[in-house]
Image (cartoon, rainbow over all chains, first blue to last red; front, side, top):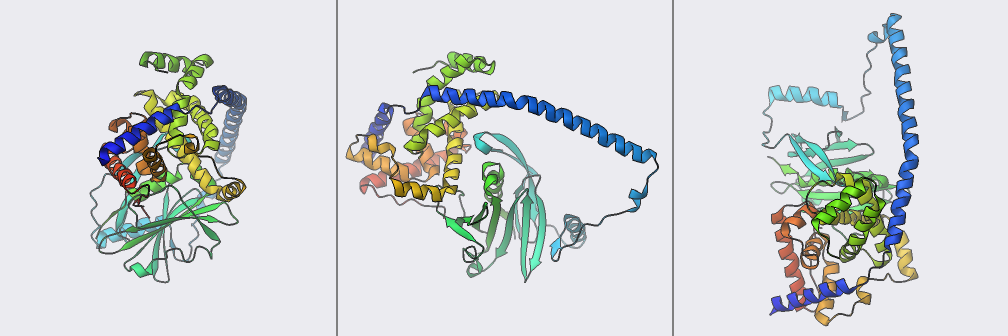
Length: 265
Length: 188
């Protein structure tokens, strides 16, 4: 009976929807396309100009470099710049060094996952493929896939260890707690100048908690996500981004990061 | 308006060659479908024109990227993505929206529909469904899309679509039985 009622109701709805008159004028759609066409047409001469300017600039830089080499100026070779070392922050070179040391002294967690993962993103509604790279966190005990342009830093302060995966002006900060009461939840975000945004549509599947926060004065957003790991552990993710980045591929990078998280002992 | 595959292919090829008339034919043939689908997944009446226009601008801009499969499947996926973008922007303009709500209530699809009690309950319940259930339900029941097509449109696996369709349907049936209330499991 309930199936019959359901089917009947859905059929009626379908027919009623079909009867509804269209409210969009095809003329206006076509005009907006023409406008778009004109905009593109106007953009082209500028683009050609930019290409020519870039070519000249490359040529001039090349001449200057060749000139300085011919003049025997080799003082640059004597200077080795060291990256600034931040308190508590390990640079990627340090990480590599540490990694190779670890390889010699301890057993690396074996993760049976493909080295790359290709997924489709649709920034501004249009699809493009992104090839993500496998990332294994020895310290926090998880693996996932990162955008190839992402850089990872590790921070330890006050006994807390965090990983920061950053790209452009956005980042994904990951920490782990084995005690549910230790979760940050939303306590401190208001103090940082954020207010919670109410959501009508879910952003992530299979997470214990998530909330979205908008900065009151700056064009910044933050997603706060909690994912459950193994043996009662929880992973807290603070995802920082600018409002403009919401229109790009960053939300897909975040989605992939969360969806592909797997946990290891 | 029923369009044959040959006709459709010819319009697309002509439009790619810069033929405006062919693109106009594509708009005429599909704008109602785009509008209807956008509305059914939650775009409000006052925004429907902007969303529909944006969909066709994207189609115009990226038509060269469409290569195979049913054109309508690609179009549904463009509409879904444009609508999702729109929802994100809406979320950001929450303050502005609050002002608009204070000025006057938004007009929804159902205001103009003359529905039986059951159909109204179902309509309301569909609008309240989470997007992951709403989209497959709308495509399957109102746009005759197959599981395979829905999976392509939503960029999901067919098994996921099947599960979501079943769960969505169960929630709607329960809502119907209880006279309109649905307790939807949320990811939160």
